[in-house]
Amino acid sequence: MKKGINYWAFPSNKDGSPIGQINAMKRAKQLGYDCLELTVEAEGELTGRTTREEAMALRKTADSTGIELATVASGLAWGESPTDPDPAIRAKAIESYKRSLELCSWLGARTLLYLPGMVSACFVPGYAPQPYEVVAQRAKDAVVALLPTARKMKVTLGVENVWNRFLLSPLEMRSFIDQFESEWVGSYLDVGNVMLYGHPDDWIRILGKRIAAVHLKDFRVNVGNLDGFVDLLSGDVDFRTVIATLREVGYKGSYTAEIVPGKDGAAEKAIAALRIIENY
Image 1 (cartoon, helix red, strand yellow):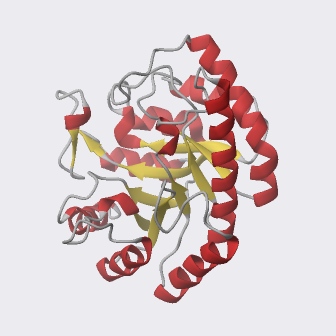
Image 2 (cartoon, rainbow, N blue to C red):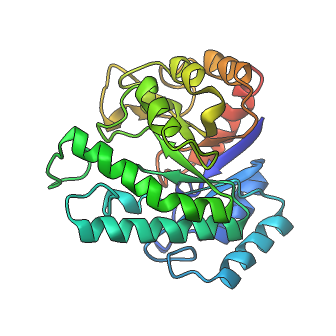
């Protein structure tokens, strides 16, 4: 089992500055992770302004550290959605994702976490709910616009199931992915996010070979909101069934822990949990 951790898991330095992606690589390796999921930010070491040379330098550091950069994530699309009602924002989101696909390729990552858009989201205040059918069409148009870059860069757009009130069932997610008839569109499955409205093993069986990457999170269903996300093995996710079903469908990729951002000791707890989970 290839064990990964998301960059956001690492707390800031004592002076409040970010730990930095290079320091996170070193810390992840020290803790025993195989992979680190870097994140594209508005500011910092990895942004839309990062050059090929700078990205290749990060890749070289990862190689020398012995940490794999299998996936890349970003939260920027919550503010600049590819399905926003403003066409200028949609265009900006597309350009941002094109750049992120390039960054993935330069870093040696195979999958870019892709937020396909949103009807609405409880943690995006002031965003007016959009008609579902309109969002579906805009989401399709966005992927069509991104596919040439994904194909050229040989990076998979991993459509993540997120709390966006869109693509709410595994059948719908499967249909969304399949309409593009492309190996460069797949699923970035988040088993914790599923728990609000379904069961991870259903999603795994239905999506099957479409699963390009996996986020491991835990969730307490009776809480039912963002406060329900807890440390791995502390919630209601049946990880025995999750791992068994992923093996059943032939998943061979990384298992990236995406946990409460910046909480002291979170990365240490996560690697301990992953070592238990891999033996299920």
